[in-house]
Image 1: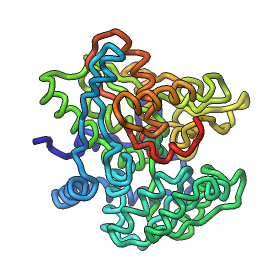
Image 2: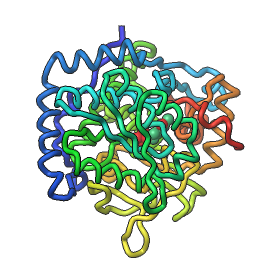
Image 3: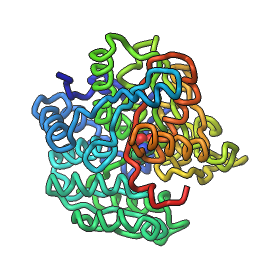
Length: 391
Ligand SMILES: *Cc1c(COP(=O)(O)O)cnc(C)c1O
């Protein structure tokens, strides 16, 4: 029996990861976020909070997610590869783990509504889903251009009862949706800001890391059960860093396990890239200190990647720390490499992954070629959303 349980070691962080992390926020938010941090710390010490979270992960999300030995891919590559199937979760990606955790917290805090922002709509759909389940109103802020580009996800959110609020500010994309949502949060302190990745000010990375750590906890038990030993290496795609920290957190103490993150490389060269750790510099961006893609004056620049979920100029502060301390290695994976892996895995295994996850598959194929290693690759989501697109 595989136990579904978040990793308690994720609760020892206090918002800083070496020189990274912290909370760089306007003074009006200080009290709200401090209350949130304290509340999270006390609830996660309680048996009934954790058991409610775990029950929903099991019975609603469908965890534990399978760890699948991909024999055809393994043969093709020359290493033994297991896929951690987050694509099989309800709503089709890892994002639901975090949405359920944070909304449970919001309900217990007495929040009156959930606010979230979304770019491609994956986080928005997961947020709207968990809000419907837990019976709390949900507003999703979205750039007006994204509302048009992601019509299907907008319809899904509305069907789930969420209010989708297009923002006409700035470039009308994700960054502007974040600004609009933050503005609303400051004016409405009884709302709960549901952040979708391992980014932003403390306590968000700590909370998101804890809720996503179920991925690594399960994968570690599963590989030990199937193989009787730990993997030689593990792989995940890195946008803001939440699915990756979810998997990596299960193996950080196991120094024999090599840890690899696949960034959205775009065309492989700066500035047409979303590979923040490969091409960025340490900077304060959207509430936290971490690596960020910047111009020659040190100002944040827009990122570029075929995968909407990886297309973010910032990155989790913990991944910045893992990179600097050499515990994990991060590589840019180009759009074309991801497309090739997306097609290859569909044909070899009958699994069409999200184009985001295909970056991790592509990196694994490249680094594991004829190595005869035992490896786990995180399939963060399913690829239905990407099928319509010409690739
Ligand atoms: C959002 C998303 C990602 C990237 O976000 P992380 O926080 O880095 O995990 C990766 N894969 C899928 C399927 C996504 O929806």
